[in-house]
Length: 413
Ligand SMILES: Nc1nc2c(ncn2[C@@H]2O[C@H](COP(=O)(O)OP(=O)(O)OP(=O)(O)O)[C@@H](O)[C@H]2O)c(=O)[nH]1
Image 1: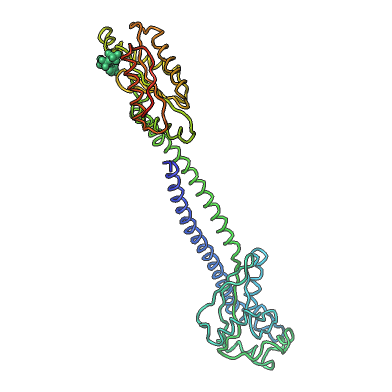
Image 2 (image 1 turned 90 degrees about the vertical axis):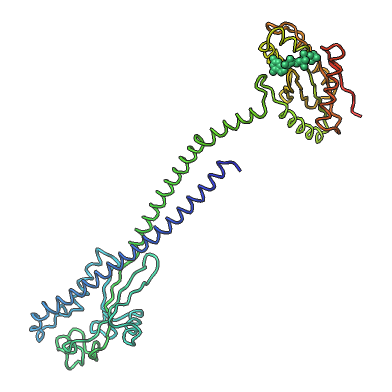
């Protein structure tokens, strides 16, 4: 696995974990904030209703009670005042509701529905604490609302003036509401609940939009970070390392005088090509050659001139080889060629071409130079050392046969 792939996998994992962690935290925080906002709004409505009730009882009712004998004014009833006032909010704030739900109301508009009845009964039967509010959620999606319910318990005897029996009630009230409903209330009886309903859709929708915005910004930042870290990784680590690796590879495999591969690399290539040749059932040859009387060149023209001859020889060899072949400096003034898919006749011809190229054109400031050649074709059985040994022996024969010639190695026993 490449360094970049490993780095990107680790980085992607870290960023995913960070995004998931942040997402979870932000989501919870926004949901909590949205619910708190709804709760705050519901408390605000409940307290507004209580304030209107108190205002009506203390500042409105005493002034209008004197007219009760001639005309019953519902505006003097605290429940009516609170309900009517908060109902006017609904045109500006749809879904925000206040209701005084009663089991047996004077005004049938206030009759409790099924789930309100359940809450009233919870208070009446002691399943809910009369001193506390009950809160909960109803509905789904767009219609999901939070409700707060407080018990309405008869605590003041003057309430019973209108609600004990029709005979005790003001005739002006009976004229409006009749004598069928809203009677029989008892002291300390929980007759209904004040209910506030606040829609949860808007704060939750706001939380969802905020969450999406935060996560999109986070994803954008992470993508930017990903790109910047990748670019930095390339320029600060991967490219310098690749350059260093190439240098190390060159140091380990190249001959720096001739720029040919060295002995170690040649063996590696030879063994790989032998395996390939065996699979393809093809042929492979090596040509070993050594410059004749090289010591004399050094001694006559100097060591530097000897180096120039070695470099020029490498160049001449390279010009003749195919790209699939390989030329190596085997040591001192000794070279070796690896010829792929080359039977012995073609290898002999190549060796002869190289010999002619070296001997045919004089070298700068040194003049005529020659070399002796040994050619061996792999017999598909021997190992790399044995093959080279046979080429070396043939080269020795070429040297002892007068030099500047090509000798074919004997077959291995
Ligand atoms: N200039 C130079 N000379 C080298 C290098 N490596 C080895 N030599 C010289 O090559 C010479 C090889 O000499 P010998 O082994 O006697 O061979 P030769 O003189 O070529 O004689 P034959 O091979 O028998 O034809 C030695 O003098 C080495 O010092 C090198 O990198 N540069």
